[in-house]
Length: 597
Image (cartoon, rainbow, N blue to C red; front, side):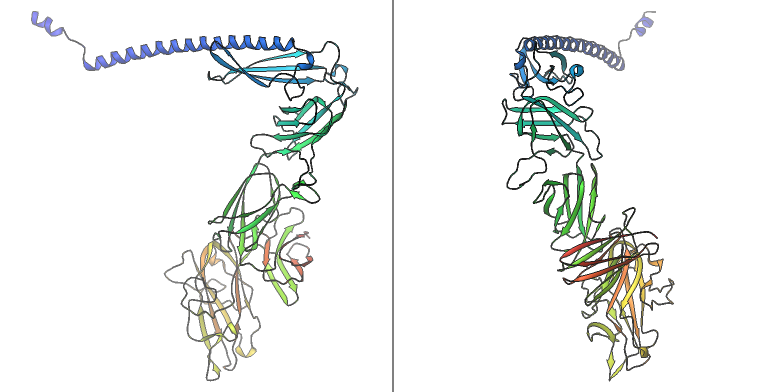
């Protein structure tokens, strides 16, 4: 029996001890947290009691001041009080913020209303806030009261200033910060206030003054607007400081809205970045007139990766131009309408710089949208060229650099030929080789690999001259295309207009088969033939048109022009033709609107 009793006597195990300790800790932490919560509640209550007492003191002090002295230093109404002050109670620092406004009570009419109250400062609104700066308070304690004069209303030499703030729509801007400064009045004014739900700030008791009040309107995330005095830089500002006349109302309006971001990228015609492009941007919003001074009017240079970003841009219509390159087009088309609060990417397609160039931008007259595949015919003295809008072009006009070039870098070279071509008679042209006074019957030349930068949709093949010697026969100049999504396919398969190797492009401006769609790399094969050994066909120019993600929509570029007058004729199925005459001087953009039939 004694042995059995001894067996039943057991102590606490390790697991039981851990559980007991955990339960005890939870119990202690709960008690501690509860005590801390009680302390916080008591402490916050003490702060509120102190703050309420201080606010009551502030109100009583203000009510015992002369009515004329109740106001903010350099504010409206002007007075002896500072806008913010600090006081210490029980070793706790409190920040006090005072706001005082004149109130135009409708009981006796309002200024500018019916009836018109020419002494609109009927009484004053007092708004006082207090907060403990170092007590983790987020919401201040506020008290609002009114004070009125015993006899008179406002100063009869004072007037009112109504400030209206609206956005681009235009809708009222609520809570905009309005900063009003006047150093020429007595007393001087330096006040900051906010617009109400109607986007208005009505200051009804200001000293009179001619162009005395400088005003700046702002809001977080918005572009600002302001008045300006004339200066050397801006001789005639569009918005002069406001005037206030005695017992009268002056109204002035400002327009602000969300700031926008513009990221500008410079690329070449095959979508590759082009760095260090010098450019200029100009808007339409004016700071001053005669001479015009624009809000946005500046030079900039894209970085080594071909990128430049503008921050805090106002909504506006912007034009862009390049100086060390020709602008071949832009995405979207110029001019560009930037809306408030947007992040707008803009791509500038650039090429070799020429003295005079022309971009023709074709748009729908109703929608304003780009019109693709419109035929643009530009003619002038010794100039005659036709292009389609919204397509890119790869062109080769010279093969005199010889073969052996895998990638189309040097535009006078190619990949290989069969030895039957001459490439410099005349300079740069391609003809059949002459041997002993007679031309060889056939020759083949294969181009270098052309990289379009991104997958493309091929459109047309065009070459010159179209007319060949009749003696050469009907198949004097022919072409086939091979394309791939890699620059080094196992084999380049050359195809004709039916998408097979059995046919050839043998007429200029033929449509390229869609077997090549969505390929980035391509080569062309030229086949020359003559039926008569005493004549040879000639190839002087070949072009391939295509569309890609970096092809400027509804635009065509004409470079290397002279400073002359040109005629631009635009046609598109479903639209009435458009015609314009333009004298090209430098790099220019011509917009033509087409009306639907």
